[in-house]
Amino acid sequence: MAVLSQEKVYLLAAAALALASAGVCGAYAYRHATTPPAAVATIQLADTPYQATVAEPAIVKTDIWTPPPSQTRGRDWVYETFTPPEIFYNARSKHFTVKPPAAVSEEVTLEEAFGVELVVVRPEPYRLQLIGYVGVPGSERGTFENVASGEVFLAGSGHRVPKLGLTIRNFTVRPVEIKIPDSMTTRQRVASAVVLDEKTGREITITHRERHFTGGLAAFVAPTGETSTREVRAGETFTVGAATYRVDSIKLSPPSVEIIKEAPTLAQPDRRTLTPRESDDPTAPSDAPPTPL
Image (cartoon, rainbow, N blue to C red; front, top):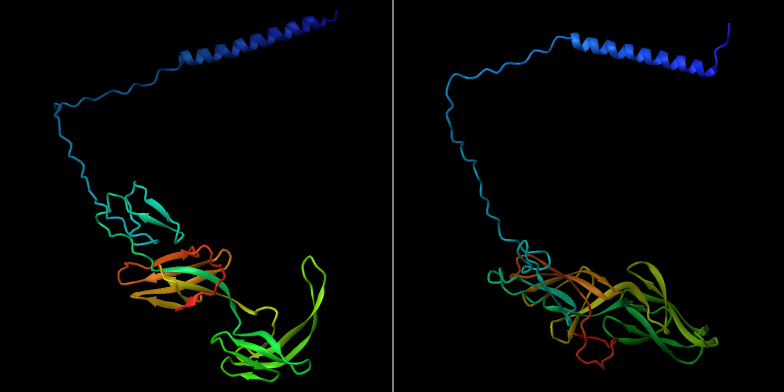
């Protein structure tokens, strides 16, 4: 028996596949032709004639918006929903103010002046300062300053200052090497004192070469347009006229103070952050001591 060639095998396989496909397609066509059609749903028409009806109108509820309330930056900071406020910058007081839009300007009064300005912010000095010394070597006495009263007095080791609640435990004057930037080191006689703070029970060392600070801050404020100042600290409250002011916080860098004002004419407290006002005299030194009230 002769062996079939490879080309004939391929032809026979293709013919067999074609016959099988034709058989399957014929079976599906026969089944589709002999399947009875699906029943068609009938439409039942009503015997009553059509009558037109009128739909009831929907209930419409109308709400009237309440006037815009005052904002947190002042009782006159009000404006319409789609009307932006007019914002202005006051170069003297260094803070922004808002003018109400024309649509509501007739219903509100002009913004009330805040009433106080920030003059300067300074570190709080310790209540006793050593500002110098007198006497010959071996018997020197220190020159001390009571910061609260401005009193200057002489004292040595063991001296108690009852008004300040302090005791000078030790006072000495000795040579100390002083490093000067961009220069050679020099030796100078420096007075120093070890002071016992009776309020805290701690000892501190002060010298006459530099002031000693507590780490706190003090702000000097003044009524608007006036030169007399008042020293205040965070948490303190003071009054100017009928208004009451509370110092919320003080910052040294950049210098600023946050104050809350309450007055009978204000519907709600007015909170502002004040920065130092500009001096009317450009030749005046910035570190000049303020004039107390």
